[in-house]
Length: 468
Image 1: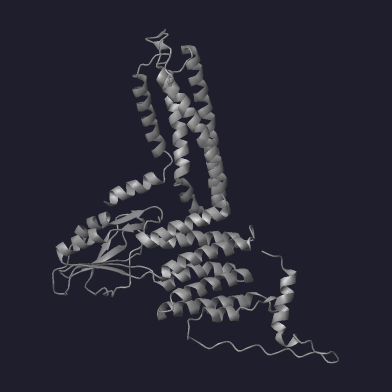
Image 2 (image 1 turned 180 degrees about the vertical axis):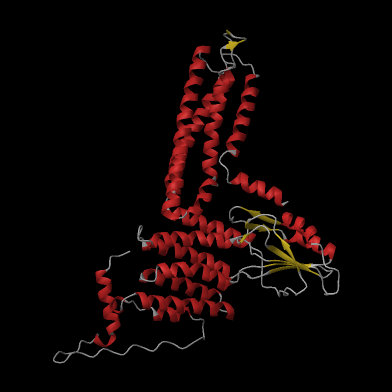
């Protein structure tokens, strides 16, 4: 099962699999159409001479070679832009882009169809002939017009796909799909690893891409043991180190054979050279965090893109706040169990807030965006004290870092934003600011009592700053 999943995952991210299948389909279609004999008066038949047909096929073949080279060149440009401007972890998204694969497959199929037709049109047994498959030549014209339409579609799709908004929206949609359908449910009570547990080492190095609890549980029930994985999905494991522990219910029972479970773990735990989004929602979060950090770097200096990335992260974290997170436990009626460690909500928050907070501590708009994210999460997870405590802790760190990095004269009012993050009924409301005193010798303006020194400082700061 895992082998088929790995093959499907490889085919989904390869640029050659679908074009290769399209070449086979084009050659089969050409062979089939060449066997169909129709008269020159048929509306579906090509009306030219054999020389005209060969000239047409030669022109289509040369045109397709040029267009394929152009498409591959633009794809390389998109990959380079994605790697340098946004994140190298987004390259996989461009390679898995299905419209690009379909367009490339159509161009390659048209080239193969037309080039193969040169072997049969106008020649037979090394001699010129007046008979040729007119319907097959008409098929080449149809493929030419289809390729022309796909070329226009590819130009539009390419321009939109390299926009940062489209890239982040794609990562958000993919991550939400993982949260809804691929993320293993957690929240169950997890037994600890006893002292008599036997370690099982990993056969290969790489990232844990996916885990099949059903495969592991059936084998654990057959041997009457409990199994717990050491790495979480998305974490790296080194060959020869502990991948899992197995143990029986009592220390006096015979120890299980780790070699037998090593083969089972190779089937139930997929380890690859890269992280995937099949069960790893943290990988999608990491991609958006990379975009935000790249935008905050001195070479790019684009805080608004970082704010947009945080806004997309808000949607993801509100979805996470509704899900049961933590360790996943699969049990059997015989007492066997499989424990798969997972991230809790506070750990997801730490993955997201840590880098963005450190790189964007000196930019007030980024701090405001992070506090808005935490406020939205607090509204969704108001009934969970553990998650509310994690949200409050991250808000405190964000405000502390911003106060340390932003000069006093340019510091915005972050504390009211932090108080909005607190769950209902938790903590104390912030004290109202003291009214400003009018200057001596000048009549007090009726609105002067509502303007505090902090408000004046933040208002002056807004005059000096450029709008986002």
